Image (cartoon, rainbow, N blue to C red):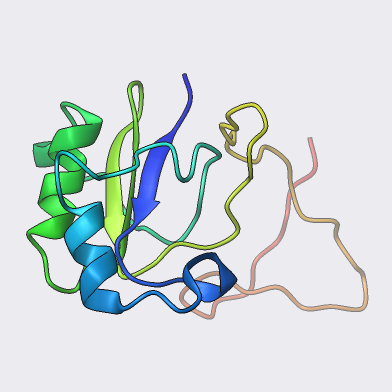
Length: 126
């Protein structure tokens, strides 16, 4: 499933010379919005907004209802994400879904390791 999304505040060269109020008005209108502006996954939008995840339109309207919101993205499987801005968008290619990293730290004998409480930590290799 592809992503849908759009900036509602000017972003770099993409919106050069466009007035911020005009862009927001256009991006927040059901007749002139462009949910295909960003179809590759973007970053920086924070956690899923469960109350606005039913559709791309619902996500856009929720973002537009928040004066701090500058961009939104929606995916049928993953839901709605919006925030002040997004970055590192993955372009026009296939949709990207990042899997959690599975692995471990390489142990260096020259380094001391501590846990989150500052206590010495020994890494057991299995």
